[in-house]
Amino acid sequence: MDAVLQALGDGSRRAMLEMLRDHPATVTELADALPIARPGVSRHLRVLREAGLVTVEQDAQRRIYSLRPEALVEVDEWLESYRDLWQHRLDALHTEVARGKRARRDTKDRS
Image (cartoon, rainbow, N blue to C red; front, side, top):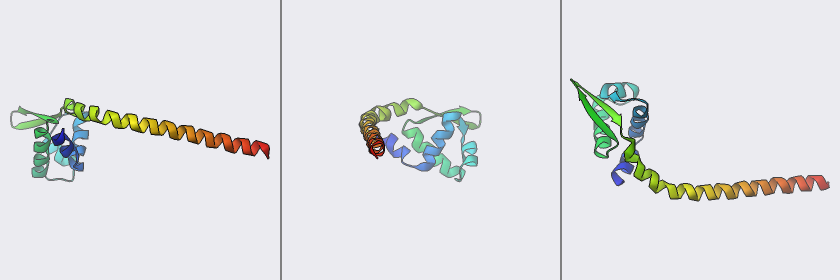
């Protein structure tokens, strides 16, 4: 999971994953869509491939990269406990906001 998190830590790599989420792409297609030269895109794709986030398929002279979403399952499972924590906090915030509205309405009704 550490390699996946390190790979996700770079904004350019996250942008590439977002593009690959929609459809497979070549290095050239990714480089055209990003402000990065082809050699830089290739280096980022190597990191993503080593982390297991993308696969590459050879098609004649072209290499076509695809997202491998299964690699994100472990990160998703790890984040689940944090989602629960935030959900409880948001529920408590909602309760407090509702109490504040009720208290303001009661105060206004008494006036």
